Amino acid sequence: QVQLVDSGGGLVQAGDTLRLSCVASGSIGTMADMGWYRQAPGQQRDLVAAATDGGDLSYADSVKGRFTISRDNARNTVYLQMNSLKPEDTAVYYCYARLRPKFQSIYENYWGQGTQVTVSS
Image (cartoon, rainbow, N blue to C red; front, top):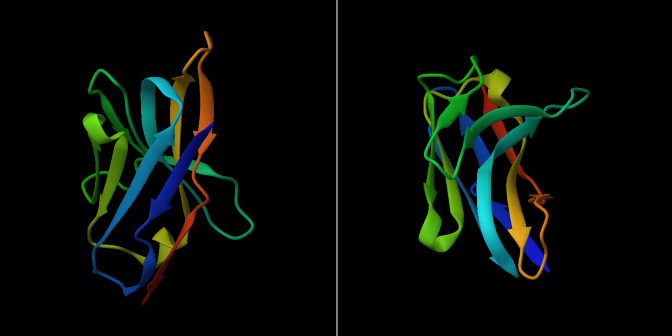
């Protein structure tokens, strides 16, 4: 059993910062990619940022220069530092991990429960 627990969301004003965290635990064999998606009301879930196990980072164009993703591989944790927040960043943020559980041979995707980020103007 693998669990992802994300946290750090909240209600902030435009221009403020937040730092999201996500910890993966349980029967983890090999961790591959980790990252963050977000979903605004009535919208699809979109990729915000991703970090491969090789250290490659990628960002949605809308957050480049404002958000920074990082990983602590020893702790199976991924962070999302969000600076200069805008009202359009308001969404539920979900962390994900692509990993191979112990005693299995295939990689699977796991999701956190989501954390609400609300940015007021």
